[in-house]
Image 1 (cartoon, rainbow over the protein chains, first blue to last red):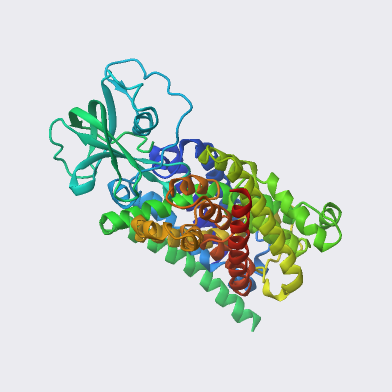
Image 2: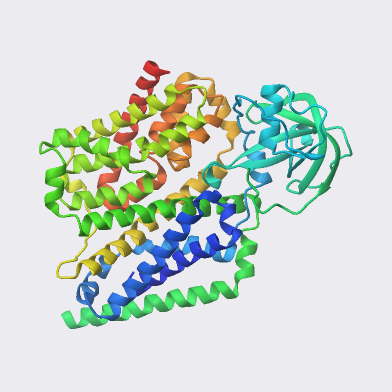
Length: 234
Length: 325
């Protein structure tokens, strides 16, 4: 792999990272907080590409390159793969396939549960809901109408559950948080469909068949398909 | 003779860029077809995990490469002679503890360690740094504390066990290691300006270490997709099997050391000791690291270093688990 080719690969790689971080594409793969570092890293890669071409055009050090280019890393060609992944394929955020494969995330008890946000219905995340149900017996939930957004995944015996992928660093560590659905109109949409569910606290509990972790349930009043949110992870 | 060589080299050069151009044009033309190929659910998940491991690693890789280029070009050799204890056996613990100040994950540490060896630091100390840096820095330990709110001793056990493994491996290298196992890639930067040497080091290291990172990310994504979690459940009940299972899983999954604590926390059916093994082994031996080490230090190094680290890390973590957890 000679210097020009390396410069092109660096430029494409840096450019792909920059493009992903200036659109919302990066949110499918990593946390929002990484964005400034991605931009800095992408800019450095593009700069390195230009500096390589600059020194190459000035003709310095080309002698050792002509003889020594077999020492230049051929493995660098592989960097084309993530470029293709980001620019051409742009794979979607993790969804129902991952939720099928892995058990629901293990919740940790909070020291206290502040009151739900104002509004009727109150908008609440799946992780927050499940934690309040399992560690606080739903005390802060009773008497309120709740609204949650997630995608449909199949639970035990094919019963639909609402799920969302929880990401702590990047999608590689993504794990589902699942909430069982009980009562209400039959959810008859295919797995992976995003739903907005309105309902109430349910005392029903279960176990995720995949990892035997505790599952919370919600008493559904109504549901409707929605388009996936910008930030699909929780 | 020289003339032919140069002409041939010249031809290869232009051909490589042309092949790349043709490839890119074809891919843009057949874009729909390529997207269609990756529409299966499993393969789609594979692509997502593959891309996200890389995107997550890029800032750390670039940061590590920049730091290693600074070490290679701007820090004089005499600095390391003064900064580290003269005796190699003492330089090992000093270098391990120095890992505390480098916040980052393991992808950045590999080029830095290579650069340190090139600048005359004793390999044992550089390797101890390589193992310690990703595991015991403040970001990783904080993440561990957040992931295990009920078990603060996990943080202590992880930090100490990782430090011990790094030092034992450094000393082991002093006793048994042979310098000819390490083959750093050829780099000729004689007679060029510092600026050119700096950018040349950056370009080389990103392309080189980055290429191996791609291999590792692909392997990790494959494991992530093909190993269903239900398999692991059956192993969790047995104390010995659960330790081995999580040690192997840490190697295969290749999760960034800043995130592995959250994954370990969610493997709740496993004992705390086996999860500690997961956290100690992961930042030191995993598929993407083995791939990068083979690239940066040579294959003969990687086939010895990675298994030895794996064994020491498992034993130390089990010991630390017995004492602290």
